Amino acid sequence: MSYPYAADHPNTGKIDETQSTPALPELLQETPSLDVKGDVAVVNPVRVYNLPSRLGVSRSYGLTEAVPLPLLGADPRRAKAVLIGRAPSGSASIGFFIGGKDDVRALNAAIWPYGVPCPITHGEQVYVMPEGSTLAAGHMISVIAENWAD
Image (cartoon, rainbow, N blue to C red; front, side, top):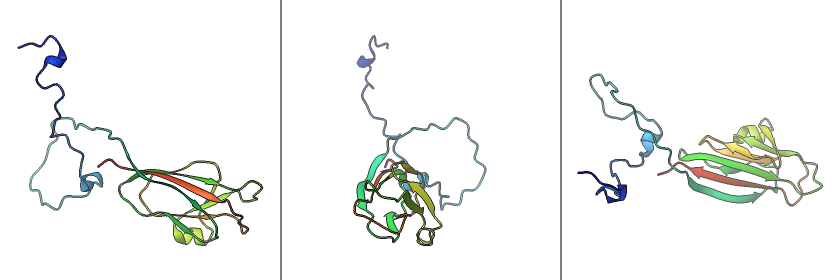
């Protein structure tokens, strides 16, 4: 039977329940716990869909002390995050330290300049600390994180 218009087809507007969002172990590419015997051959191409990210955290923090601030916790569901720092006008500070807690505390972490977006594309814990020994009120860091779709 032919349908002159696509909207007339009986399957129009129906959702294919077999195409669901992958589970967390599949996203993490973990080896399944089942012991599979035998060879597996891929016969057809694998279909891949880019799913929209979900909003994780979006907030700003004041940097008031020269101590490492745990800005982002370890999260395997985090797709990406963007950090943006701001120093008060007239401040001599050029940026903030970013990295692991021990590297930030020892001043061995990377220095990222204020006003430049810093992309984070991993799921590990991230610490920040303002560069410079004199801190005036107004040092801020904002974070916008996105998680993988569920």
